[in-house]
Image (cartoon, rainbow, N blue to C red):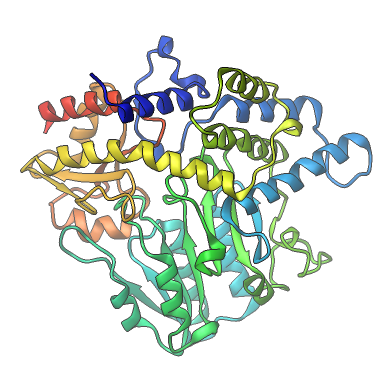
Length: 453
């Protein structure tokens, strides 16, 4: 007989999956476990995008009714993201198509600002996605700054040490860039502790902290205000939204670059985020962001809601207009993420336990399943089978996953390719779960892994 907690979890999975058409069992899709590459999208988001294109499609700021509606959608999207990141009162957010674009724009803005001079120092954690490594490498090359690599440990579990970062800090440190969670390792770095250490370091407030939150945001709630971080980026399309991304900057950080933003010369550097949104964000994508509030409210509501309440909620989610999306408050964000964490925890535990039990398997990342220190993005290699072979066998068994370097090429070259005699690019096998995956799916996955591994 199923326990009460198991029944509650089953209800939560069903509650979530009912909002995603791709999970309709009649479609007979593979179990989707490649969420770190991009999440699935609830119907309310897709419906809002379609509705905007059909009924609100106009350029901003023209003053007529259609333009006013479009302008309101874009403004509301910025406010939704600020609530999502807990950024109200401490900074602003710029929107674009991808985090890679935003970090590249940010590094180029530092180049134009001339705030980085020869002899200054830039520190990068080598588990970074190239989106938050390459731009800073290029900036160091172009400015004559000294590049320092903060490295994860060479032996399993390939952990990140703040004490190693502390040794690298100096009175010339201007930028420290690192991922909140590596999209390969799955380890959670303590951003709050890192920021405090950096701010108390030799360069103090002269150092700007740039955090890639792409692999963190699908699992745990962002809190830029609580962490005191200078810059923080994440991909909306990995948190159930359209193919867009957001970059938070504190007021002080944006002030550093007020004349260096990429937008047109007549736009004031104090007009933030406009100065940093060259070409502007996709309006229909902004409608999708606004509609994402509906899904977060849906998942934050107590599971004991009446059937009438749930029916009303589903009806609101299906009308397609972001105009009718409920407001998003911080309590809702935190409540939704508490639910997501509860849903993911047993899935992560089951998969980690399975992999730890295989003598020929090495997990590339934490070998525990504590949701405070790791997320359900789990990478591994096999002693004799290539990652490509494993990937093909697991996909043939019915599971959508992937293998490779995950755009953390610098890390896989150092920790995987050489150590495990891999050919370039073979990398790791990565299975990445989200709250809408189910215990039944993971049970089937484990059964398949028992045969393959």
